[in-house]
Every structure is written in C-alpha cells, then in structure tokens.
Length: 463
Image (cartoon, rainbow, N blue to C red; front, top):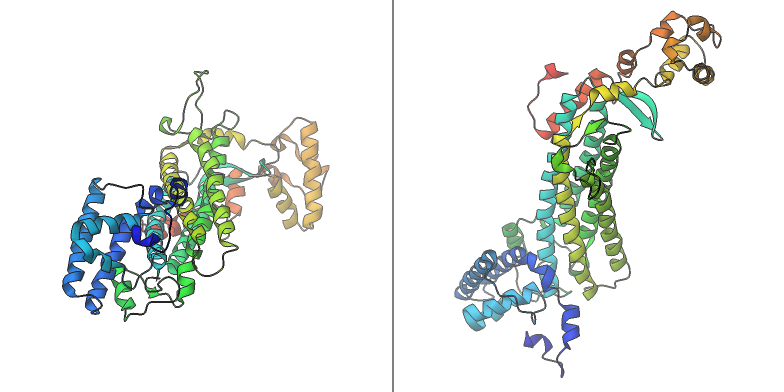
C-alpha cells in the first residue's frame, strides 16, 4: 500500500519486494486475521472510537473478503507484501475509505502476533487430538497382545522377556508426556496481544478484555513490548513437536527393524509400504523410514527459530517474519506424521509366533537365575558372576540353559536345585508384578489406566 512508503522518495526495487514479501506463505493466516479484525472493529464501535455504522460496514466487508478467500475467488496481488495488507486492500475496494479506520489503535506488530497466536492455539488443539488417535491405536494393539511375549532389548541385544503390550504402552507413555507438553504450551499461547500497538500500547480507550473474550483468549498481555516481540509460544510448539517427532522416530526405527526378515516381528500393511524399482520381491517400510527422516526436519525448524530470536533487541524486528514458514512446516509435518503412524500401527500385524521363537535365546532368563540365587541368600553381585559363568559354559556346550543337567548347574553353585531348571517365560513375566512392571496383571492395569485417560469405556474386571 502506498501509504506505507509515504515518507520515502523511492519505491522498493522488485528484488526487495520479492525478498520482503511473506504473502506466499502467510496467506494461510487469513481466517485468524479476519477473525481478529472483526473483533477489533466491533470493539472500536462499542467504545465509540469509530461509529457503530462504520464498525458494521467494516464487519460486513470483512465477511465478504472472508467468503472470497474461502471460496478461492480472492485475487492475491504480488505488490501487497503480506496477508494483512492484501485483506485491507480488498476491503478498501469493497467498502471505500472507511476501510482505513480498521487499523485505528492497531499496528501490524500486534496484529501479526494475534494471528499467529490464534493459529498456534488451533494447531495445538489439532495436535492434541492427533496424539490421542495414535495413543488409541497403540492401546488397541496392546489389548490384542496382552499375552504375547517377546524379547526386551538393551543395546539391541536380547535382555529379558517382556509382553508386547508392555512394549507398545511405553510409546503410549511417551505420547502422554507429549500431550502434556502441548497442553502446557497452550496455556502460554492463550494470551491476547492486540492492544499493544507497535510497542508502547494504544492511545485509545480499548476494551481488551472484550476482544479477548470474543476471540477465546484466557487473558490479555501485561507488557506491550513483550507482547509484540514474544515468540516463545512458537518456540514451545517447535520444541514439543521436536520431542514428539523423536518419539515417532524411535517407533519408526523399531518398525523398520521388526519388519525385516531378520526379526520378522511385524508385517506392515501394504498401504504403508512400498516396492522396489528393480527388485520385485521387496516390501520396504518406507513410511516408517520417512518418519525418521522428517524428525530431523522439525528439529531444524526449532534450531532455526532459536537462532533467529537469540540476538533480537526489543521490540519488533522484521527477522520475526521468518517464524512462519518454520512453524507452518513443523505443524504440517507433525500432524501428517501422527495421522500416518496411527494408521500404520492400527493395521500392523504383530507376529506372536516369531516373537516366541526369538525367546529361545540362551540367556533370556539369566536375570531370573540370578534372582533365584539371591533368594537363596547369595549377594546379587556374586549371583551375577555365577550365572554369567553358567551361560558361558552352556554356550561352549552348544546347549540352551534348560538342557543342562542339575549336576552341570551345581558345578557353578550348590544353591541350584532342580526348580532352577524349571524357570519359564511365564514365571519370569509374572515375577515382575510391581507397578510399572511387565507382569500380565500390571500390564492389564496399564491398559485400564490408558483407556481411562483416552475416555474408552473399561471395567475394573478387566484388571
């Protein structure tokens, strides 16, 4: 708009216009911009800052602009550098000079902050819903595999038996922390900045509380300088999104491993796999692999935003225009990732028989044998050494532990009795019956708790 450059003797060059324009990406903020402008116009009219008739003209004009944008009939002009100017310019065409009164007691600085906060609030609500959907998929699979045993791993080496349900519920817990982080971010995003002006506040009798109420904000900002310069809420969303994507990436890595021929623990649905351009037998877990890759993309947006903010003096600086592309892409990436992972988990076929075969590992019950000796009075460190030597001996004999004779057991400790040879997967699992453990009874309680969190009907009898 020409009035923006009224104090300049030259127009910006074409390169500068392209360099400074944000219209190509901030146009997606139009619903928030129009909602904020309508609330502002209504308040200006109520406060007598503009006449009621002018306020009504502005509101009707903004409704018309909104209809054009929603229907895809709005003409975006490259000379208008952002969505705010694009809307105001069209409003001027529709209702005439009264359109110029819309910007009374408002700066683009507090206007863009308002739009972005409204956008992030909506994005958080969508994210919370998407996190819940993935949690539901995990819980449904856990409930189907309450009795499916599998090797638990440390260092990607078989360690101790666990229930598949227990393993899947570990991701439920990660996502529950993600949910809490996003919900907490919402509290600090839910602040109205409008009324802060360019940096010093507005010289008009504004009813900020009424605007906050109309737009659904819990409170108004307390410091005008901070309000226009603050992008903590963007950082917080990006940080929470990065942690959430790291969880999805870990899940993706396990799906990639487990779907390999070497593991064979899961068959991913054809809808979530791809083929090879040259090898017709291939069924590649590309969707999971992309989940790993996209995590780094979101991490990069967080680092970029931290770098942008770290040296900015108060109040507003144009550097802050760089917040939007990073935020928009992170929101899009996370929401689509959560949707895809929900479908991938829901349709996955976990291979209980293959997991059971993997539990034949010679040392999978070694910790149980050490616990056996401890219960016989041997200090744990000594028991650990005894069982370590026993496992090594079994390997040299090319025998599983269960095939060793009692005499062979007693070569390493006279405390071994014949019941040591009767340790089983079922007994090992049942022994871990403390809160948080993998015992079937505890896993049933975890599922019950998860379903309560998700609002899924469940009865106490299920535990």
